[in-house]
Length: 455
Image (cartoon, rainbow, N blue to C red; front, side, top):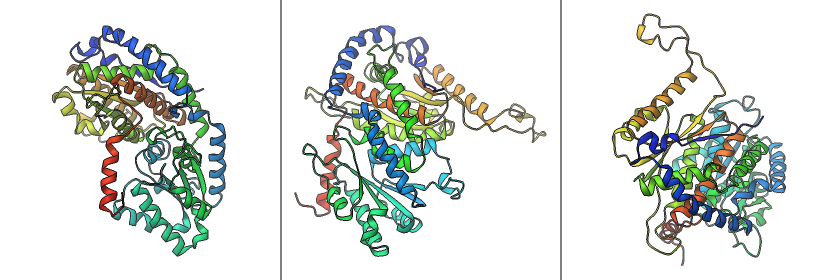
C-alpha cells in the first residue's frame, strides 16, 4: 500500500496564534482568485513546455536509460561514486542519499552496503576536502559523475580537470570512459552547446541530458539525481510513483485540495501580511535534514528577486533557514520563541521511524529518570516535537507541518515534488520569476575575470 504525506496548517491559522500572526479564513478566500489565475498560467506553461520539472517522472525512456547505465557500471564493482557538481547539481542527491541510505552508509563494509558504492558529493572547491577525497577515492576504484548544464561552472570544471589529469596519469586516457559519466545540456539546435560535449566526444563518455526547460534546482528527478540514485540502489520507480501521486493531488487550483498551493498561500500571506520574512524548515528526523538544505536553495534562488514580473523593483523573497529537531531545540528555539516573531516554522516530521529503540530499565538509583525507563527513543522524539510546537503556539509562532507516514522513496519523492510545485506557485504570488537566478551570475563573471578569463 502506498502512503501519502499529510499537510497540517492548523497551527499557522489565526485560530491558533491570533490574527496578527496567523492566516485568517478571509485572507485565504481573498487570495483564491489569484491562485486560480496563477494556476491557469502555470498549467499553460506546463502544457507549452516552458518549464519541464512537472513531467520528469513521466519520462520512462530516460529512467530506463539511467537504470541500464547504472546496471552496466555497477558490474564493474566501483567502491566509490563521486558526484562533481554544485547547487542544483548536488543538493538533490545529497537529500536523497541522506534520507534513503543508511546514516553510516560510507562507513559500512562492502558487504554491509550490499556492494553498493560509497557516495561522495564534491559540492565545493575547498582544496583540503578535495585532496582528501582523491586520496581515499583512487581513480581505479571510483566512478565520477560530472554534472553541469553548461559545462561552464568553474568549480565543477576545475574538479573535472583535476580528475582527468589523475585518470590519464594513473590509468591512461582510454580509461576515462570507464570512470567518468557526464550529465549536461542536450545536444539539440535549441540548446546552448555545453563545454562538456567535446569532453564526452574526446573520451567516449556515457552522457545524460538535462532537459533544456528544467533548471538545476528543479532537476532532482532528471538524470541529475536519478543516475546517482540508481547507482546507489534506490527505488527510482517508487520515486516516480510518489511524484505521480503528488502531481494528482496538485492538479486542482482549490486551496482546500492542493497541498502545494495551500503551503504556497500560507508562506506568501505570512511573508506579506504578517511580517514572517523567514521560512524555517525544522526537520524531526536526521535523514530529512538534507531535504532542508535542498529546500534552502529552491526557496532562496527562486523567490529572492530584485525585480517583479512587471519590471518593478521589489526585493522579494523569504530567507530560508534549516534546523534539526531535537538538536536545535538547544540552540535555535530560544530565538524562535522569544526573539522577533518574523518566522513561519515548517516542521518536517515522520510518523513512524524505520527502527524502534527501547530505553532499558537501568540507572534505578536515579529517581528523576523514571519517566524514561521502559519508554522508547521514538516516543521521546515524538514528545520533543509535540512539546516544541505546543510551546511555539503559546508564543503565537505559526507552524506549518509536513508529516511523512514513513521515510521511503515514495514519500520523500512526494515531499520534493510538492515543494517544487509550491515554489512555482509562490513565484506567481510574489510576482517574480521563480525559474531564473540573475543575481548569481555577476559573481561568477567577476570570479572568471579574476582567474584571467577573457570577456
